[in-house]
Structure formats: structure tokens, C-alpha cells
Image 1 (tube, helix red, strand yellow):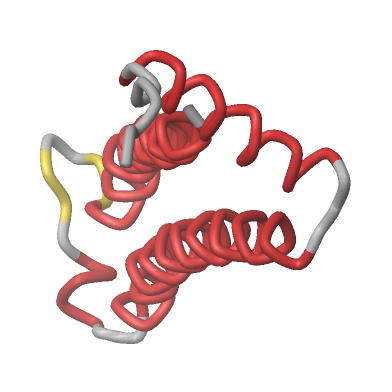
Image 2: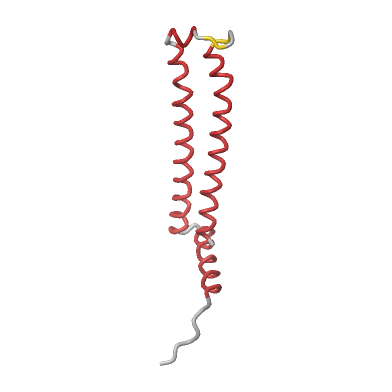
Length: 115
């Protein structure tokens, strides 16, 4: 029994890539599973960042109920104003950069899976 030549790794990789892309383009069940997994990971990331920010920012009004916090001052500036003005915005920027980097990483992993 004679076996024909086996396809090279490049041919297998190209056909696998076409298969994955075809699954997505034709909206088959497998393509739906791929997209659902991607969307689930993106949603998990979004909710994680949103809940973290809400938890940190939601504590600030609760701290204001604490009289010592409300009356504290640093360089004659009330501490609640310093926290809101100097800590909140950098926190939002850091959360944004984290979200952007992680989101791009998830998209890159999905793209690598499709290749």
C-alpha cells in the first residue's frame, strides 16, 4: 500500500486558518461558539473593571459619613477633596489603560486562534 505525500505544515496551517475563518464568516455553530467565547471574555473583563471602579468610588461617599475623615485637612485642603481630585482621576486612567491592554490581549489571542 502506497501512501501519498503528506501535506506540509504550511498547507495544514493555511487550510486550518481558512476553516476557522470560514466558520466565522458563514456563521456556523462552531463560529458562534468562537464568537461567544470571545464576547464572554470581553464581558468578564468589562464587568470586572466596572465593579472594581464602582467599589473604589462607591466607598468615597461612605467615608464622608466618618467625621474625622470629613474634617481632616492636609495643607489646609480638605482630605475628601484631595482624594477626589488627586486620586480618582489617575485611578480612572490606570483602569482605562489596564482595560485597553487586556482587551487587546484578548483580541490578539482570538486572532492567533483563528490563524
